Amino acid sequence: MDKIVETLENNEKVNHEEASDKLDYRMPIYLQLREIVRSRIEEGEYLPGTAIPSENKLAEIFGINRLTVRNAVDALVNEGILQRVQGKGVFVVGNKYEEALEEYGGFVNTVSSGQKKVSVKEQVKMLRLAGNKYANYFNIEPDDLIFYLRHFTTIADEIVSIEDFFIPKNVLPELGAVNSSVFTMRDIFAFYEIELDSMQQTMEIVSGEPKVRKSLDVPDGVALIMLTCDYHDKNGCIIAHSRSFIRSDKSSFSIKLHD
Image (cartoon, rainbow, N blue to C red):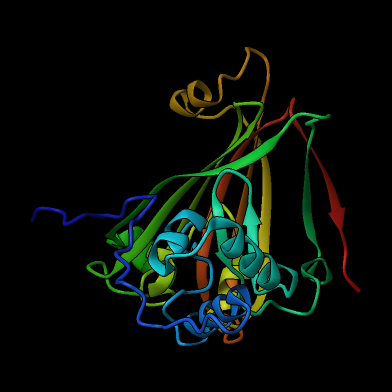
């Protein structure tokens, strides 16, 4: 039986209709636009973890200047409803967990970047069949769909780590629209009210497969750190799995213990 694979584009384009919200020019325009954007977030038109239309697009839709749009967006950024990400856009921020993840303990990674820019890129996002391996892992059927994501972490355009995520579609169907390079998986779970109870991590020092070493351009004699993590819900079920390969010469780890 042929595998059915559905690929999702990283920078998914959304068709926005012409604005039906009418502006009253007797009132400050930026305040009206602020409330329109807020309303669209509350009504679910702009989903948590996704980018709103660009300032240029909003200016075009509403027939106003870009500075007015910037003021409206800035007001929502200051409220914590939106988040600017340089080079990527403005994203909707949902509710987050109040407790610190470190309370659970675990490995904390610090990338040795100095003054250089560290960025995360969502390189791959696709839907695939779970197959026997992940059907057993997530307690689902082999024909069920799971999301597969791959992130590259770079320092000054040099890839220093590769991270793969596997998440059943029925756990987080909205993931296809979310930019997972902007928000952590834990934050995305919180946005969509998925209760995360614990995370279980393992760490190994490995040589790594040739393809992985080539992607990371690992020098001879340098080992890789393989970090795996299972995300558990309140029922103890695994709802996501991640696996990272990290250059040992570019990272350091500390261990956070909980009481």
